Amino acid sequence: KQEVTQIPAALSVPEGENLVLNCSFTDSAIYNLQWFRQDPGKGLTSLLLIQSSQREQTSGRLNASLDKSSGRSTLYIAASQPGDSATYLCAVRIAGTASKLTFGTGTRLQVTL
Amino acid sequence: GAGVSQSPSNKVTEKGKDVELRCDPISGHTALYWYRQSLGQGLEFLIYFQGNSAPDKSGLPSDRFSAERTGGSVSTLTIQRTQQEDSAVYLCASSLEGAGKMFFGSGTQLSVL
Image (cartoon, rainbow over all chains, first blue to last red; front, side, top):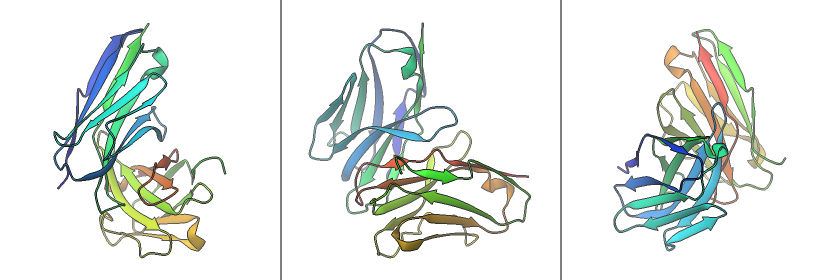
């Protein structure tokens, strides 16, 4: 059974800092991995999707990396802003099962002024 | 529409009543997912529809839960004889293809009294 863990569970940083969020998964036979953000009381917003054959994806100040063999992904946020405050979730899709997106429990990020 | 639309946004019901939750996916998206997010918990997969294929119902927690997708578009999740443990946010998502980037709606907050 695929298990997805995110560390830390919560993080508070001052504005302007660069930060890294971690995601680990137990079964390396994944099809892809997706990072989301969730604002309080809202649904999830997709940030980046990395296919299993890729090593990283970038969008603006966000960079996600994938090391399938070690079962790890990181989300790097450069020059953090208060608007980045949210819960960040990673989710993996197991190879051969398009429906099975397994989510981590998230990292709650607060960027302070 | 521009995004995934869910209705109602909030639903309060009494224990034992039936409820219907609606999801309007992004036009042209062939895959549709239902997830449940309980307070302090991760996202729990419920059901997945892909085109005309038989849905993957493996995540439905009991036979009180059912879902249908009419005409390959709108989906309805029905919970019969609701229980207090059914209280959660029910999230719907769609993707262009089975394993593609997922787009979530804002969810339906269900409260069973």
